[in-house]
Amino acid sequence: MQELFNKVFADLNYNIEPKIIKSNKEADFQCDECFKLAKEYHKAPFMIAEEVVEKIKQEPNFEDYFKEVAVAKPGFINIVVSDKYICENLKELMDKEILGATKEDKTIVVDYGGPNVAKPLHVGHLRAAVIGQAINNILKFKGNKTIGDVHLGDIGTQMGQVIYGILTDFPDTKPEDIEIDLDYLNVTYPKMSALCKEDEEVKAKCLQITKELQDGDPTYKILWQKIWDLSVSDIKRIYDYLNVHFDLWYGESHAYKQFDEMMPFLENQGVVIEDDGAKIIDVKEEGDKVELPPCMIQKRDGAYLYATSDLGTIWQRVKDFKPDEIIYVVDGRQSMYFVQVFRAANKGNIYHGKLEHHGFGTVNGADNKPFKTRSGGALKLEDLIKQVKEEFINLREENKNMDEEDIDKIVNAIIKFADLQNNLERNYIFDIKKFSGVSGKTGPYILYTYLRINKIISETTGKLSNTIYSETDRALRLKMLEVSDVLDLASKERRPHYIADYLYDLSVTANNFYQNNKMSGLTGVQKEDFEVILQFNNYIIKTLLNLLGIHIPKVM
Image (cartoon, rainbow, N blue to C red):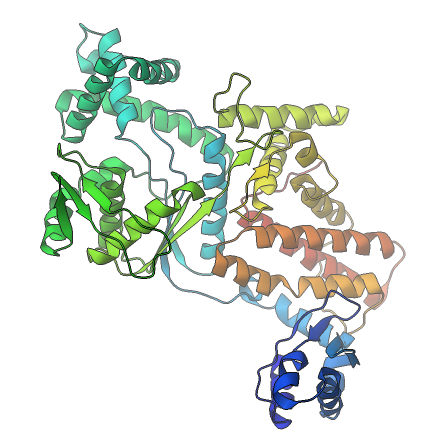
């Protein structure tokens, strides 16, 4: 259709490539380019539109494409496609791999998760995990080789604080004989963190332990490993519940192993500047709208920073995977920091591939401020999951008797769809009651649609005819034809919300079809057509839900 319009505009000597876009009005599509041409050719937009429409109608294959092409003043071209065109395209789509999306073949590292070892996961960790996993899934579905890396914060100040707490609590025990559990860890970190804010001497000691740990102190290394094993085991448990998985469980400690090789390399590139004993890389560029501070990679005392760690991680990823792209799904408030790191990696000749930071907004409570507990602390992610689970179970009496596995799948759908339906850059309010319902734009509504339709269809190997039986039938077929573009757009822009939006629109359209086209009593071609359409509808829903990390329960 696009090619046909290109030909007609060229035949009329109009120097423009017309865009065919979806129509929000009575037509299926529309073309608005006549407004752009009016000034250049000194004609009213509707006059140009009438020329185009007349020429289109003279094309020998007009009826294969269109039911109607008409001018709507002051110069729109409205397009209604033929039933045959819809059906032929739908049959073609059903035979295509990956739902007709464009295949890709890149190696892409996706950095998401980013929890700190020794600290429990809180609500702030939800978005990185859920959005990052969805982006990873979408890119992999399109044919890319993806490497998901959790990138743990495992050698920062919190480790020094917990080690200090352990040494204080077990003064006469050899490090290898010390036994701690998760409850101990969950009490000790906040206690030591609070103590450091009150006592400068303790704070200095914790920082010293952190520095010596980073330098490889063997005693601290033993305690570090005990903390790491306990904390990461618990982090994995919660991520597993959310169907969030990683290929690599690397952290800052892995990056530190790269410094002996990376730091001399950076020095030899001539980009490292000494500044009052510290080492920095100037990352300012002409045209910057805001002044960008230099990227500090080593303090005066020789200690390394987050930026050094991130550069070391890029160094390692280039060495191990030679990626075409590295994507970071990290809180949007760190956008300036990532500009500094990316420019430092480029100027230091560590990596010249594509580096992207996709920053996300916050999950907020009813007060539209980041989710907190009643005492004002960050709400644990596990506690949010429990709250959602309780809300769903208590929503209806029959929910209390549901299979545990099905409940968990629905809880996942509630949490993830609530998050992923938003453009990742936006903050959003997590309303447990609203997002748990089976009506409106919610995860349960999509699941309910799938299960409702699944009950009335049977497996069929039949082929679609070129007959459309009603307006709701036509609307569903047209909606299914959008899936390829939705997948390509979500992949290109790294925005899972395009898929979530489409899933909701498709579910609404499918429910309208279901309510207005009775399957009972149908026979012959029409029954076969409806079976094929609804089967493909559910195939699309299931495939796209999987990309969002949502699995379908047996019943609801």
